[in-house]
Every structure is written in C-alpha cells, then in structure tokens.
Image (cartoon, rainbow, N blue to C red; front, side, top):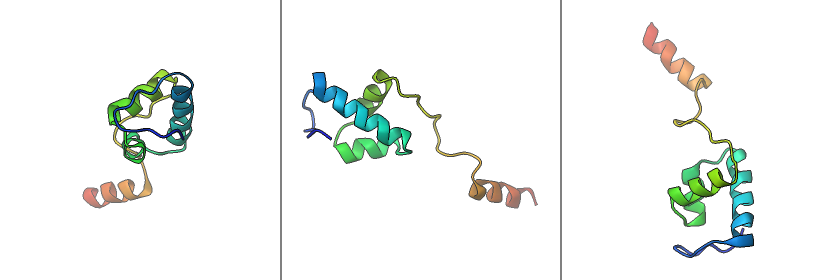
Length: 78
C-alpha cells in the first residue's frame, strides 16, 4: 500500500491504489476500524474511500448468529 502520512491528501492514482487495497482487505473481513488503525487514517477517511470505490458495506455490529451468541441466548432461556 502507498505510504499514507496522517493528514496528507490522497489523490489520483495513489487514491485508486489505496481504494483497491482497502476494498480487498475489507471484503476479506477486516473492519473499518482496524483498517483505519493500520493505515494511520481516520474511520471517516476509510469509510469514504470504501464507499466511493463501490464497496458493499456490511451491517453494523459484527457477526450475528455465531455459535457463541446462540449459546449465550440458549443459556438465558433456561
């Protein structure tokens, strides 16, 4: 990925490169927060780049319906 200095403008081909890399990582399961932290950019910057690149955004709140969350709900019902 291109060197992203905090606060620097990212335009043109560099922006396209950043968008492609972030999209690939987001589609691979990384969160926007983890992408922001690893690149040194803000959550808003990463979100805007992903949105502008046509990335299908996941719903908020993380994975739902995992074995662990089902086990917790089963325990509460007993």
